[in-house]
Image (cartoon, rainbow, N blue to C red; front, side, top):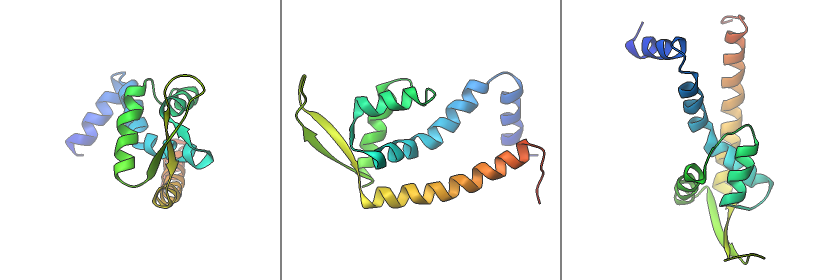
Length: 127
């Protein structure tokens, strides 16, 4: 058994479940943002609020804005400014064609991954 696996098991056993959950969130949050943007264009605070409301996927805007910058630079989203009824104009984010393709690819991989983990966690073993 590799030391990485042993370390992971030790963390889980030692009550470090929040660390495990944090790692899982980091791996999926980008695609949660893309999924929200597939529904409609949104500005950063609105995305943060929806992710927080969805089971606390994020806890602060400090998590979302660096992610938005990165996925914009990768061409997965584009931005535009819109006047706000209150306060300064807001930067909205919109999914690009590349973002749609990335989200669809993730959905396929996610379903396969989720099903495999569920099967093992439910004692189904490997078939």
